[in-house]
Length: 309
Image 1 (cartoon, rainbow, N blue to C red):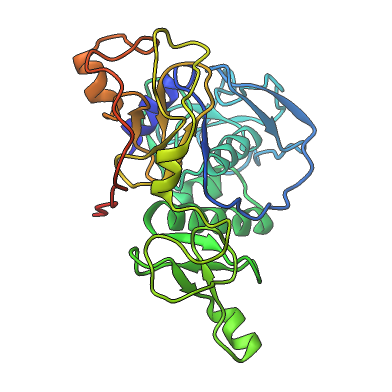
Image 2: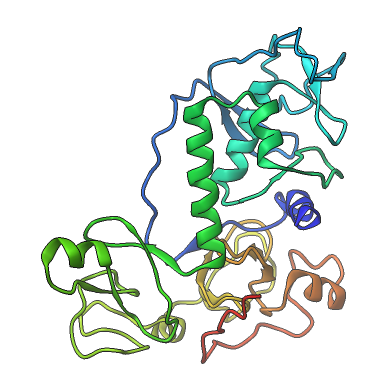
C-alpha cells in the first residue's frame, strides 16, 4: 500500500482531477483552520491552527536537531523535533496536519509524506507521536472507518436519515434503510442510483421508476464528448467513464494529463484507452499528454464488477 501511495504522490501534478457521480458524503465538523499553503509536491492544504508540543522529559521519544520535515506550510513550529520510526523528524502539529490530510483524501492508512519514503505508521504510533487529543482520536477513528468502508464496501448515505447504509447485493438497486424502517414502522427502501425513495417493482439492476433515475449505461451512452485542455489530439472521448476496476462512474476535469485515480478503488487508469496507467505507459512511454497508440476506447457497453479480494 505504501508504494502505491508513494507513486500517487509523484503523479499528483501529472494526473487530472476526478469528479464522481456518487452522492456527496456528509460534511465533518473540524477545528477552525487558520493557515493554508502547499506541500513539497505543490498541493495545497491547511494546518490545524493550534500547536502541540512534546514534553522534553519524555524518555520514550528520540529528539533530534534539524528541520520539521512535515512542516510543508513552513510554520516553524516551536516544539522539539522527534524521530518517527522511518527516521524522519516531525513535530506533533505537523504530523497531525499531514495525517488529517491523508484521511481527507480518502486514505485509511498513514504513510510518510517525504518523497521516496514508503514507510507506513500504525495508528498507535500516530496517536503517540501526534499527541492526538481524545477528540482527535475519535475524529481519526471515524474517518478511518468511513474511508475503509467506501474502499472495501458499497456504502452510501440514506437520503432520508443520512445514516450510512451498506449494499450487500451489488445487482439490486433497491436498498432498505434499517434505521428509517424502524422509525417509520414500515419498510423504507430507496434507490441506490438516484438516491430517492424507491418507485416501481423490485429488485432491479438498471433503474427505479423515478423520472430522473438514469441508469449508468444510459449515462455512458448519452454523455457528451470531453474537450481536454492539456491533452493533444483527442477526438471522440466520452466525458464519463466507468472505472475499469470497480465500475464507479467518474469524470475527468479536463485539465492536466489523461490519467485519473478512481476515488473508490484507488486504481489509476487512462481516461482514453481505459488501461491502468502502468499498462498505458508501458505501451506509450511518457504519453501523459498525448493520445494512446491504441487510440480512444469506445463507449462502454457494460459496467465492470469489482472483484474484491
